[in-house]
View 1 (cartoon, rainbow, N blue to C red):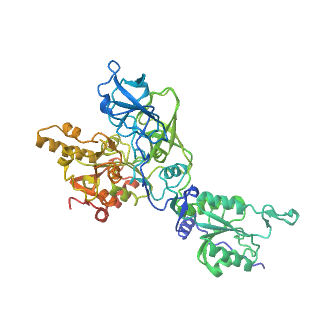
View 2 (cartoon, rainbow, N blue to C red):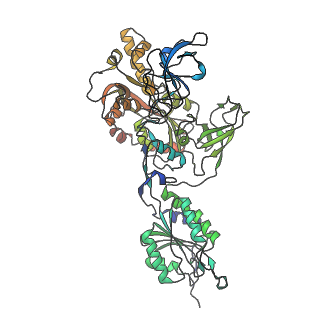
View 3 (tube, rainbow, N blue to C red):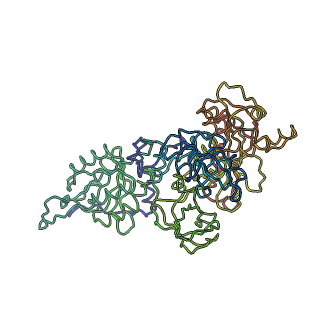
Length: 627
């Protein structure tokens, strides 16, 4: 009587998943050239080391001017300026903008020295040697300042980010030529059975031969799941040859897959090889198709035996094995390319044409998908990273109302909404906290805008800095030392009064920034002492009205010799080797959307915030409750 190995105690699908999830197939990390990084998963955070753009540039065609020269200009009473030159995109300006002069400038061109605004060409009239300006502009109008897209020192991409063409574009803009990524698990493929012939070989159908379908099908599926497939010659039903092939594969791979030879017949030898040289963890699963599945460990590699029938093999692979490979590679499970959700806010339109609106996705406290607009301008690379897809808006649509159902076309099937959507103040300590979370998204829009978006119910949390009143739940809070970042060993500026009274070039932060709020409050206090207005003191500071985006941007201007002082943090000054004049401390708080406090991502953030003390100790100028 023929000896047969019978299936006993079939495992449930849940048990099979648990056994496979327990296999160690992680392959570590490696550094790869950017050209080879598409589809890989970042192993570490990547910070911007340069400003993008790296220079102040015109955002439209027109005339580069000193904004002060245009004050009061209108259609009825234009201001006339001498045109002293022209600057095109890609040129190094060779002309200065002196008082009472203007320079013709193209979109994308470098702003010439001493110009701080651009008047769009439509609001001008060019004459012989001069131009009539029919509108006033403020410093920074129609200018994309260096670092506006993304600023040096900012958190560009976090660990666990899947690198699609969007992220590759951002890394390219930052000049990154190689990135640290999670290594792909190497997955060996061994097809078994005397009847198999590799495609391209001679097939003897009369002898019952068939082409090997599973090897290439599994190889492409492994690549899709994030693994690196490695094909081995097919093996017949011979114990010694099977053992030799498995041993070679185990030495070279993190996971070995076989297809066929897993049923209970006498010629199916693979389970005996595994038992002889390793450990058989599972034989048989209560699922159709795919009952004859093996799971075990052989030498130093994990092993899974798949059924021989191609449909069964592929079904079992995608159901049980692919998720484990994706987990090891840092990939996530695929979903549909179209997601239906509800608008989180009302979005109005004034253009009579069809619009592809970039949007982000976030789940609310009840697991419903919410959709919010993402638009930083067509020239901003980071819009691609922050958006998950787009909503096609017909030309006759006046608005999309909050709560309205929309279909989001995902940029790729692998796109996932963030586990946590954070907005608000740019803060280096909070960036470190984000590194400990699973797939968060942070939009550094500043304290004021962050609070506004929290009031509208869009994000899960908002980070606010400076004096702010709030009834929102506080998940965590700390203090940070702020002041003036100055050149190292430069004692000319010893306080706010010296900045106001001296002839120094200053770099400020935007009005949405909590740092700017604290600076303006300090300026107002000094004005009260002197019996003056805050505006008067601000006007006395060269550069007060020209602002930058991120917390490191002013300090980097100082480091580059482009300014004498910048508004910033002590930790930034220490990091860049610059001097620092303290003006005080300000509170930073993480405020929660009260309807999302039980969301898994918010709870994970709370757990990360439990370790605030150690994080604060590692960051210069930060403290808990003033300590």
